[in-house]
Image (tube, rainbow, N blue to C red; front, side, top):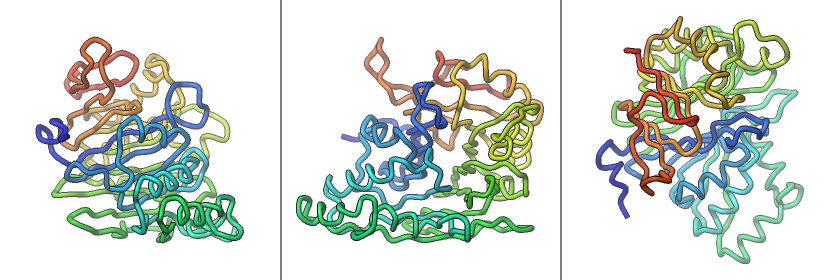
Length: 327
């Protein structure tokens, strides 16, 4: 059955599957998103713990996915990859490969191809049984071709086109996330774009560079400017967040990978963001659709109406906060 939201608001949008961090104490799955193109779920970006269940909640057809893009290989961005891969083939993917894109490795850290091999290699992988299982029970052949992208930031890096199919393009650029090779991605279709910067800390200019002119900038985490501890080596400050949104000229800043749940706890950091960026800010929640034309739709059924719908109020319960530039 065709979703009326697709006809009303366009056929290119993102469903936020997981918008939490790794603490598992705020009713959010860890990081994960699915990009819909022409109404079909086409690209999966990250797959942290809980995103497999959210894919089920959102009724996403895993056989339609064309590719998976992993920003980096931390647990809270990749833990559900095995479950999603198995489900995709069990649900009828057959012999169609599921391409996986991600960072190349370093001498200290595995790259995407090695990481996949450690999971699924038939002889030595942690889930090596899956090839035989799918062949026997699902009449399918496991195929996960990996494309590795250089993830070492340099000076004046340019985004690199790594995917192009049916009018959809994906560009990538390296960002700094401690010692972990990490990529930011920009997905574009018919003049619209959504940029996923993933996790980053040290500023190289690459975030604003890949996000320049984007319609939606999905930004992970924001720490108070005076925060201390190891997280400051891995995640940006609120000032960094606001500055990148302003310098990129993003139409909407969508905050995700939230480690706190109470909107009051976020307000101080959001005030700092607003000091740098006067555009529209959305704090995402799991199972929210965000469109490049500034529309945000809560896909969960309302307990009052039994229907989902567009979010129009500036604040919608504890779930989604929209801060308009006119406020």
